[in-house]
Length: 278
Length: 328
Image 1 (cartoon, rainbow over the protein chains, first blue to last red):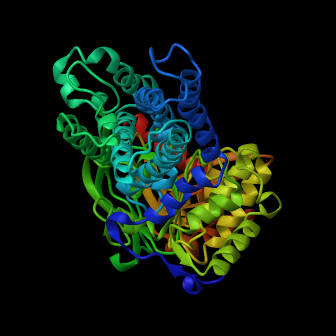
Image 2: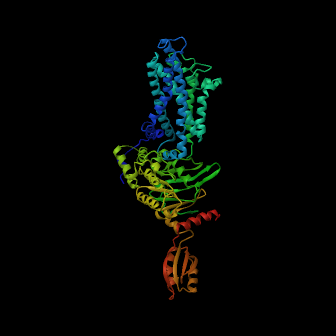
Image 3: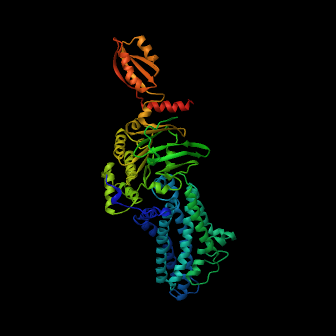
């Protein structure tokens, strides 16, 4: 039996012990398999497919908008305005639901199958385990669901309408969408840490995602939830649409609340997972 | 409780030490005041019926569960505050090992190895290859493990547990789900590894324990009821006993033997024209120099077998466990 001396031991970084290995493995699940391609194509079809369909239909519809000539700047502008709203609603609602579906098993499946117990019998801290999984999912989701789709949408707007937002405005709007995805991702992780129920883990985020359409009637929720990021509510117009057009924000309260809640979700996830018994 | 420690070493050579380690699950005491000592380079068999608390103890040692009372150390490090550091020196095989099903055996070992080593890449790959060979999985190393049989999974379990050449190997029922050949293979691997590491394993297969363990602890209903080197345990409790197979021994000789101050009991059973004696003694030296001589001093007596009585581990185990269960 050869000795361990020929091998370089991992460095004892205490709390972050095992992060690199776990993160690499989780990243490989996204990028080393066809998972990224499937996610990219699904969301391209859902988000940008819908956007493209709308723009092409609207530009070729004689009745849209009333009084505009086909191919005129006025028509393109009106279609772009409508297209922006449609893009953020679809990218926000459907992708957020997709995030919950994708992340529902992140912790529950590991706990139920026994793989978490196996991994945690190796030198890795529990919060490293959670953070490595979360970090890999954040990257995978942001790249395939937010950034790549944003780039395609930018090209569609530029090609078919006269709307060409500045890069900083685009980044700001995409940042808001990214924060919304993070919110639902971390919420799903937290529910997966505090319970072993898949129904709860996927049900609550779904309720919040689609409750946006009705929830705006509950003013306290409408003020703090990320609903207003993507759609006009009774209280405020869509914040992402305002950002991409370079218009001033009517409120920043939902942004701050969403960011704070996202951090809280991560903290609760780690706190609960530290106490999990395997 | 039987606690023998004839060749227990000083604390410096203890790999595992627990002090009143306890665990309660929702009001049920799964482990009660466990005091265990496992010395370096031993193969320590941790026995007990199902539900005795063996797996709970292992999970506590690995930090997978938290004790509700007492304390424990592995390599002198506290299991609650230095768990990650402890796990750097430990290899663990779970009772029902589960891995990521889409990964191959080689990928599982690579993933495991990178928790311990950063490189060089070639040396890690060589270690993986050696380990696959050790457990005989080299031919199916690149197949996803979802198609593996129970025996193959168990061998992969041993491979991943020892990929870092751990100072302590903890195996929870390593041979429980295996056929006789698989069991033999696993025991052979354990015997090969004993030169390099301390092995702490739980089991209820007593033949395996008798074959390879040097120290044994018996747990029953969450309590430690015996801990001793296996040789001492097999001698039985309540003094040594000697077994004789003889014939032609008169009542006078029998009475003379019974009258010796070092004889505590004499039981006899007739078998095929012979008589089997089981003589329990309090002084082994006196018995070994006098017992046979006394019997053979009678001209008609003949002895065909004489030796120190050894118990079967199953007898010892059942005596202890049933004795405890009946409140003896």
